[in-house]
Image (cartoon, rainbow, N blue to C red; front, side):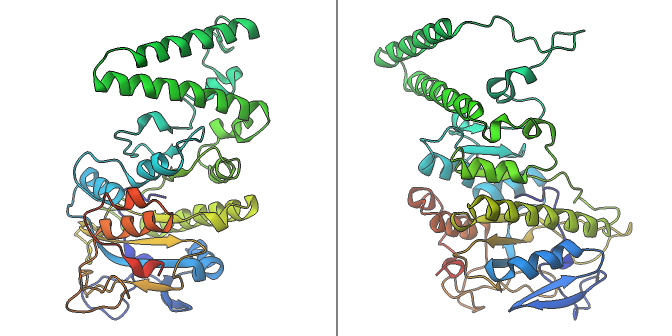
Length: 379
């Protein structure tokens, strides 16, 4: 779950009430077990979240992202690196969800699916799933109001078309061709199989048959939980539509935090109701933090350290990992215990991503990261 735009950790996750170097925001520290969280009556969803889920939540402060530019930082926070690498969701979906109809459910435009695009699908009011699963929602011709479904073959004709497409693809796959061509044909054949699975799910009355999936994209929580409980998807990436880039008015962070935690509460509740919570790990991130001090406009600018949260039943929860100084810079920590030690390492996004991959049992994905795991999160 991504807070794109850069959240200010002192509004909730990394309180600094005693620092003269950090401009304070309204609120007070409240302890949820061993978790100190900055709360305020204007952010009730934050309090509600930690009251209900604090024991299953680990907060990670002082995560380095190497840059001050949004796109560079979101690459690092999702993939661990500045290059064109697949994000954690794409890696895990490929490793663990290859047999599912929609391994990677991408509800954010910032999903990095390099090498795994054939396994990803996006919901919304215009997407490749809409007409596939629910043809009556297809786009009309210009100037018309009814969906234009075009030629509607009979069941026998559809079977013949699909048999031809599969046979032609298999024939091309068996013949000569470059590695790239072979890979694309293989992806095409896999996509045909997934299309059949998605259509069958819609016919059974599953989550894909629900019109709200396409029309109410601001509230995707039940759809995500449904995709997991129906075993359609392995991973989902969601980005609530909230304003975080508060260069001109940092007080707006409070409203964004409240909206983000309200969504997180709804997601975890839907996972619980759908029976998927015990098998799910939720990683909540923002691609960067905000400066300790306000600028001349009352806003805060980009900062190359941020905070993150991991939520789940197997998390070493109810505590915070990583200390930051009065300028929100990280102290080095021991990756096994989470304790601050001079001989430790400064936290980086890769430490967190590798730990989450390990928690999900995605060993091949975990091995792709160059830094060690923040093992204290789950050991």
